[in-house]
Length: 318
Image (cartoon, rainbow, N blue to C red; front, side, top):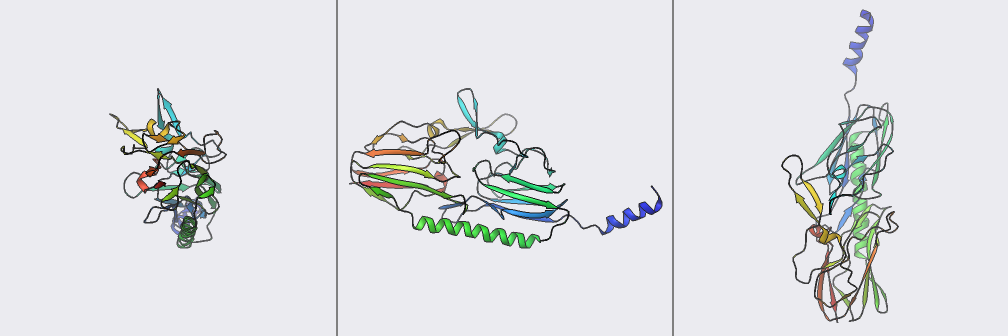
């Protein structure tokens, strides 16, 4: 190396721009927890090589770069138990990304949570939340970004507000679909507008004895249960199992997962739909649940997946 080459390198390094830090918002939920924004905001962000992106979480999600690979399965068996896949729940990979390998932010615990990744190679990199199927974003890495972090964050907040507003408007107009002695309760979300409703519908639902109610999944993001406790304590969706070393294991509670097979309800006993999945899911899992009400009364039910957000409702049978 000549002294001139060395001097040029020193001058260029002295005048090089420091990496720019960008922010993407993950999810969003209003104070009343009735709507979930299932999106990355902004959905697409353009940055420069060497820049960092920090995802700030406002809900239970992850950020996963699959690099063309398949997403990890939601659950993994161990003996006669099912566990939430740690490849989905826990951080995977280092803090830089060149378009290869698997990176996962892990999921929030209690308190604020964020994830930062530095991009080292130009390209168009798609990523997703592997907890909410269809929730995707893209990072476009160029030699030099043309926008600013402030403008990108402003765009993200505007997109998030639009998603939450669309969900609130849909919830305000949500009504059961009545067809004689059958009532359909839609479980609603929108892939295009990036929201899910964490409510069953207007309260309460009043029906006649002998009516069959069908809960039908019309949400591409979420999973739900329809669970009548009949006075029992609501079971937890997950059971955390501390380990002597390393992170805890997260068992999926079989009482929440398993359908009871009930088709009629008189206000007694534990009745559970089991997991209801988005329509057209690859595993052909159930996306609806029907129950005929055979006795008058006032009956409360829950979604066990979203019990902490207050997803419960009441049916009055006359």
